[in-house]
Length: 127
Image (cartoon, rainbow, N blue to C red; front, side, top):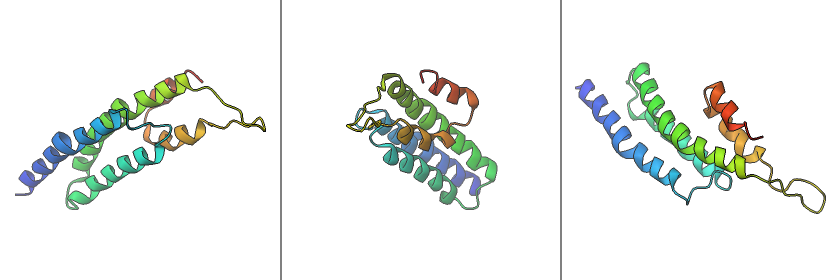
């Protein structure tokens, strides 16, 4: 039945796929400063998979699953790593006195994924 299929889909995402991606993003191998595109593309692909995994799924079911993904990936993986990177960031100037490691290149792409104002404020408290 549709209900069983939706339950199975949610279980696959919440018990297998999201924890696997979360583990990868929490590892020291993923650096949000150096590998910003990899993280963004992974997160966005995961959200696209939710939308396409069951085209007949109710909008509310997809919203709930996307909320779980948001909590696990953005709040538990990305945000803490970005906050650490912001707190340790030191601008480096090149020979022309231009910042060679600009923060905006790795912070701004993530901003649309930070849904609430307090998360943004927390992120930029050290800046």
